[in-house]
Image (cartoon, rainbow, N blue to C red; front, side):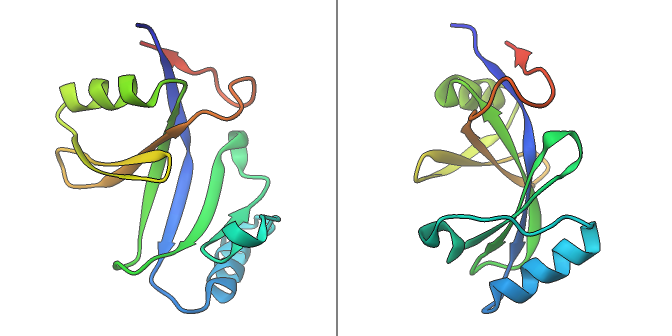
Length: 126
């Protein structure tokens, strides 16, 4: 079955007890204002608005060492995961509604549900 996917954006993983301070730093560093999230989400995530090209950028409080990872969004998560596995990626785990994967070169990334296919760059059709 055909599906579509594209780069959704970047998640800045911060091993920190002060997500607000981390979000302020990245907001100032990137020139992107901190946006609004629901109270449930804002305990773990801070959204940065107005990223170039409509990319999604978030700061995330994590327990692992700090790093940056990218998200690939798709209209069919399982089909996209299988496509990426065929390219050599490994499925690491499912978290909520997304899949954490690892590239053959060791970088972690997530495959997430496409929320706004009409916004941003046109998705690739596979």
